[in-house]
Length: 128
Image 1: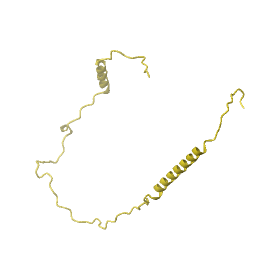
Image 2 (image 1 turned 180 degrees about the horizontal axis):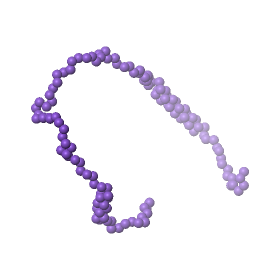
Image 3 (image 1 turned 30 degrees about the vertical axis):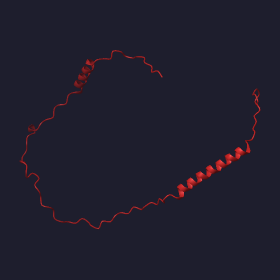
Image 4 (image 1 turned 180 degrees about the vertical axis):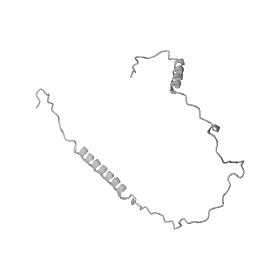
């Protein structure tokens, strides 16, 4: 016993026998319903046997035969070619890449010229 704890009388009167019998019957019927549903799912389902994988046999095999006649793909175009070497100066050279310092200076100048915000929240606390 805990000293200072107020004790009250609690009446644990049994429920009426009619109510108790109704609860028992409802519980038994619920169990039978669940058991029959589980039995129906387990037994009446189609069997799920695994089908073994069978490789299809192809009786035809590769064999040697003559190649088809060559076809000219350029018969209707003005395609010409020549043999020889060309100097490297005849080809187009790619442009020289711009140094990263110049790119950074351009970005800094663009950033300085952009319109700034008129009002800045320095100590903004979101309200909940």
